[in-house]
Length: 399
Ligand code: MG
Image 1: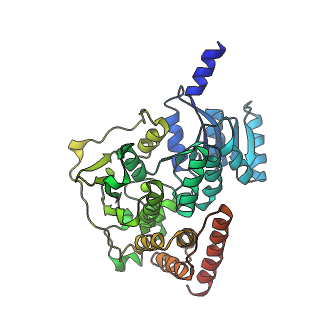
Image 2: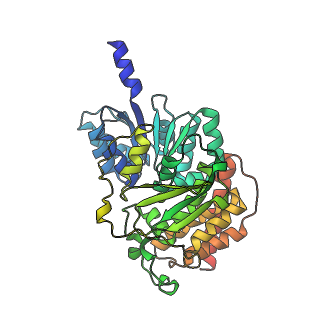
Image 3: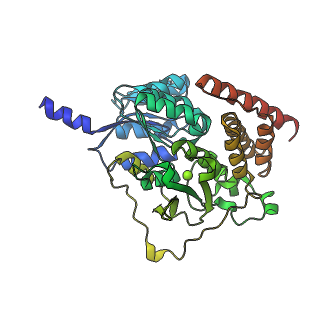
């Protein structure tokens, strides 16, 4: 009995989800829910949405849930008393780190948005976890460092971001980067893909949040509208697949059916297709190296009228251009870009700046950034803080 129990448990992936109440977290749980024999939820974590976190805890019965602060912890503990669940409530950075590094955990879903996800992603890497990476900002800020920590601790990164997941699916395991001519990330172009540069000045927050193909959180929706999201993905791809800037291109593809291409030196281009639903890449990452059902139907080819592709307009989508510039300048510029973008998005959402001021603010911060080597978490956080202070100064003075 003991033996068969052990075999069962070792086949199961034991999962902590960092950011379970967000869009990626919710999609992950809906795939997990289809495969109770394959996955055990060890821990869940949220930030603002305690009600949903509690609801998820009741359904998936994790050992731990993590919330943002002591106040939220007390509220959740009170509510849990009525449920007879043995789930423990933790809070704050210590809590996120605890569930990312716990010895019982095999798999960490890194789905916290923005720089807030960096430390817990690094903790998972240090502890040899399989990391399902949805937090692109951590790769933008610390790509090479995370790669190094993963190699040293036998941790693996499986990209969840749909474009990178597509490339990951396409790349054959033994394919040499010499054999790859380039990768091409597809971009829907967001809600303003058909706007003129002039019309971009007048767009509202509501319009910017209204993505035509994907339902996502606020930060990534604004990033998609500016195409910063695609630029961050270019930087993410350079680290994940260890490719130079000249081997990473972006093509507009409004239908969001093809989720990126790999072009090989022999002239073959391979791609992955799927409905624009994050459960598809999430299921691939969860099941890897096997395929499991996701709850999503395949692409209905006869219902597709056309698949279109065209070049992005870098004058209109300056954020994309700024990402290429930051990548060519190096780590410090990528950190500055990410920090100033987070503040710019917040400032836009709160009505402080207009849409076209987002790239203006980021560019001003990039100009102030010096080229330097960055090789520790402390240094990354220091540069991140510096960029936030400086960006705030620019925001308060000149805009
Ligand atoms: Mg993406």
